[in-house]
Amino acid sequence: MAPFFLIFAYMCVPYFVYSIVFSCLYKMYSINRPMKNFATRIGQEVPLKYKVISFFCLAVLAIIGTWQVLQYYLFSGAYFWFVLLTAGLVLLVYLAPIGLCVSPFIKFNSNGKNRLRKFYCNFVGSYTLMWAIILLVDKNIKIYSDESGISYRNGNLPLKMLGGIGLLIVGLYGLVSISAKYSNSYQKIK
Image (cartoon, rainbow, N blue to C red; front, side, top):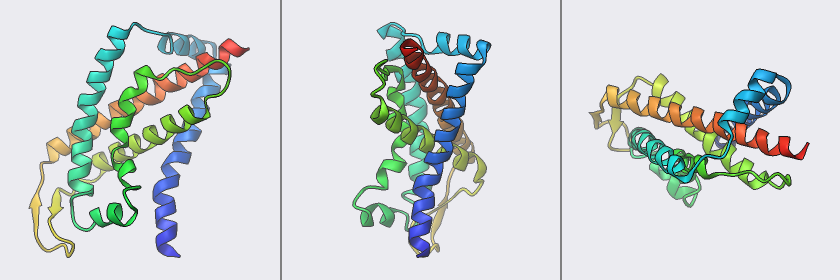
C-alpha cells in the first residue's frame, strides 16, 4: 500500500498544485483590470522570429536543468529502476522540462476545446517547477554510482543551482505565458 501511495503522491500532487495555481491566475486575469491588461500583452500573438528565439532560450535553460535532474535523480543509485519497472512511464516526468520549451508555439482555440492542451501544459509545467524546487532546495552533491549507496562521486553545487534557476525561469515563463494565452482565448468567447 505504501509504495502505491508514494507513487501516486509523486505523480499527482505536483500536477494538482500547479493546476490550482493556473486556475487562480486565470481568475485573477478575469477579475482584476491591471492583470487583464497584463494577460492581454503577454498572451498576444507574436511573430515567428520571436517564438523561435524564445524557444531556443528556453531549450538551453531546460537542457541545463534537465541534465542536472538526470544526473542527480535518475542516474544516481537505484532511481533508474523506477524507469525500467514502469516501462518508461516515469521517464516522462524526468523529461518534462524539455516539453515546456514549446510553450511559445502553443495556441488555444476560442471554441473551448482545449482540454488536451491544458493537460499537457499543466503536466510539463508542474514537473518543471517541481524539479526546479528540488534542485534549489537539495544541497546534497553526492551522486551514487551503485544501488547500495557505498560508492559515490561529488557533483558541482553551483552547476546544480544554475540548473535549478534555469528550470525555475522556464517553469514560471510557461505558467505566466500559457495562462495568459488561455485567458485571452476565453475572453474572445465572451
